[in-house]
Structure formats: C-alpha cells, structure tokens
Length: 335
Image (cartoon, rainbow, N blue to C red; front, top):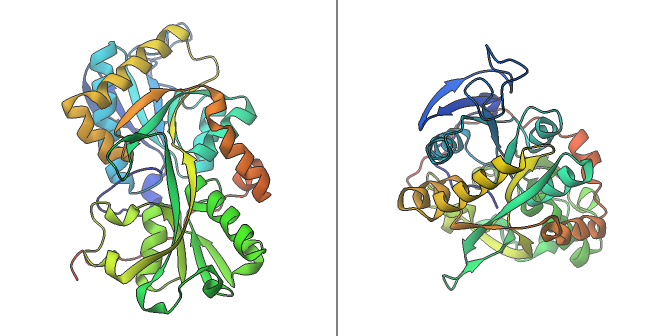
C-alpha cells in the first residue's frame, strides 16, 4: 500500500518531477541523474552528483512530491549528502530508472520489488511498518474489492461481465492479489470474468472511478478511501465486498552498486526520520508509513509466489504498461 494523499493532479504532471535537497534545503530541478557541472570523479551524494531518490506514483503526485521533498531535506541534514527526488510516470518507469542508473534509491511497492530483484538492478533495505486494527505495528497490509453501495452487488460473482478498475499492472494490492482472489473464487481470469478492465494509474484514481460511476467495481489497498482529499461521502457511497492478503509492505531499495557506506547512512537516517516527531507526520502523509524496519530480499518471496499462482508475468506486464488515462474533473469533497 502506498500513500495517503490530498488533492489530485493529472498524470501528465508526473512526468519526472525532480526536487533537489542539499544541506537541508529542497528546490525543484529537471533532468535525470546527471547534474550540470558534474564530473566523472564526483562521488555520489556530492553537490554535483546527488543521490536520486525515486518514489512510486501510487497516488497524488503533488502530495508525494511535497512529502518526498521534506524527507530528502531531512536526509540531507542528517547525512551531509545531497539528494534529488524523482517521481516517475508509472510503476514500471520507476524500475526502469533504477536499472538505467537514473535512480539510486527508491520507495517502491511489493510487486515492483520482485521485478527489481529479478532484473538484478537493486536490493531491498527497508520495509514499511503500519498500524493494524489493534494499533500494533504490522509488516503486512491487505487489498480490497469495492462496489457502489447502491449497485445491489454483494459479492464477486455480481461483478461478472461488469467494468472493473485495477490500479497498475505491477501493483500488488491494486492488481496481483485481487487477481489471485478472483481466480480462486470464480475460477476465471479477470480478463474473461469482467466485461472490461481499466488501469486507473493510482489507488485513489481507481476508487474515484468507482465513485463517479465510470466502473462497476474497483481494487485498492485498505483503505485508500480515508486518505485526505477524498470525497466526504465516499465511505457511504462505496462498500467493500471482499479482501485479499496479507501482502508484505512496500519498502525502500538501493540500486546495484550503491556504496555500502552510504547505504548504511541512508538506512539509519530513514529509520530515525520516520521515528522523529516531524518525520512521523511526513511518513504517514507520504505512504502511510508508521515506521521502517530493515529487511532482506526474501521478505518479498510471498509476493513472487503469489505472482506465480496468479499466472502473472511481472516483467511482461511492466513492458506493456500503458500510460494512465487523462485526468478527469475532481469530485467535490463535500456531500
């Protein structure tokens, strides 16, 4: 699950937003990892060769950008290193950035993490911690299937032949686990079970498509509907008819070849930031992180196993990922 956000911008605004954070400050900047004036001898993390921190565009780009900039600024202050924040255009684009040397560290979703590992482009170093229903910190989360309350649909079978919104082809809670749930309960692949399918490009966009009546059902993480900026009546206008999971939480990975000494600095700084008073607020606002813990690659084995059971070729899905649909007018936040 990624992100609790406020406001919405069109996906076209997400076409790589770069924010420079040096010595505790942050400012916008364009381009990829190369920095004007940088030389081949500049060490990564220096002013001329900042560490590129990429964030999955799982929800509103403006909110991720703002919280990402605050995090980058805090990391710069804590480590003395220079950072830039990048928001790629899609889940797949973010992994390609890591593999192409255009991102050095990334906050990414679980299924993205398995693709990164399969490509040999990076390694997970941290996973998120989130509060469960009891208030305890959990290492997993769940996916939900939603319909409109007035639809008369009470279970998955009621969605047969209907229009359905997934999030992204390489989203664990927005595609993989819902797909496995549908196959297990209906005996059909979503591509044949539903009348038509769209990929909304974000968890909030998936649920908002349902709220507007553009689709009959939608998948998202539990519970994106409580994110700031959602319509005030979305909880009464939509309802959950099924859930899937548990799913290992999203996390942070470093690109192949990232210096071990810098990895140790960044790892500690990120854990400390999400535990600090100011950091707690930003980490929750960013991806609903209540903390971070160190992990190894096998933490994400359950996601890889689920992909095999669901018959999803993650690399193939990533290669054909379409751009999110054009923006639509935002619904009112009042009833």
